[in-house]
Length: 281
Image (cartoon, rainbow, N blue to C red):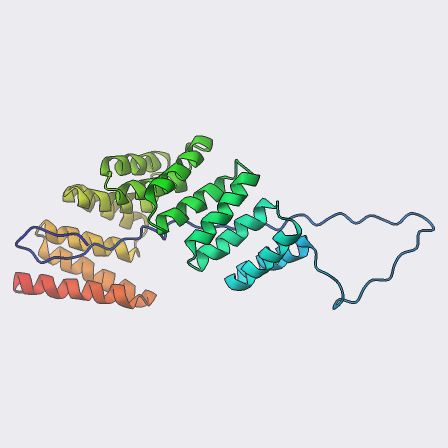
């Protein structure tokens, strides 16, 4: 929630702090290569499927299938069973962490990403996802430490830079946040979230002209970005551009409605009502 000047109604900016990081599970592992029997070697008959005990790889692959189907609880069970058979498999820990993260269990996700990193110390995606879990858990300093590790390994990693900027923003270290967003933009001038997040940071610094420019740039890249319309509308209101503020908020409300975001739609409509009451229009 961000407060405007004292004489104006209090209108909230909308944020997407924790929805920018795509969590990607690993691919299926290679299956063990079949070995042909030696001559004269008796080949045992294949067991019935019901009697066959699943291997760690079988359980892992079934867990991946459940991840792809959105069955995160079932995936946790399969990866847990796979880890009983092969406790040192980094990918099983990583994917179980991914499943826990989707279930909202950040503590369990952090545990599994940590185990994956112990086994595979250069596991960049595990660092990124553990950092994302720390962000959602409001452990911002720990998140920054993880993103620092990724950036050491991959200095141009946009996800790590952007997420570290978000953590700095949450700690109200706005100059550090701006530095991270600007680094992202220097590598990729079309990164829509870098402009959006930098706009939020400029709002916090009361640099509303700069915020307006960033939201406008984000909308040039992604014309259906409802949250950017919403925040540009609030920013225009702060700059006393009443008609343009209402137009942006109406567009945000329209897009929210199309996306089925009921609470966001109501927030935009409430802002429009407050602005109209304030301006007498």
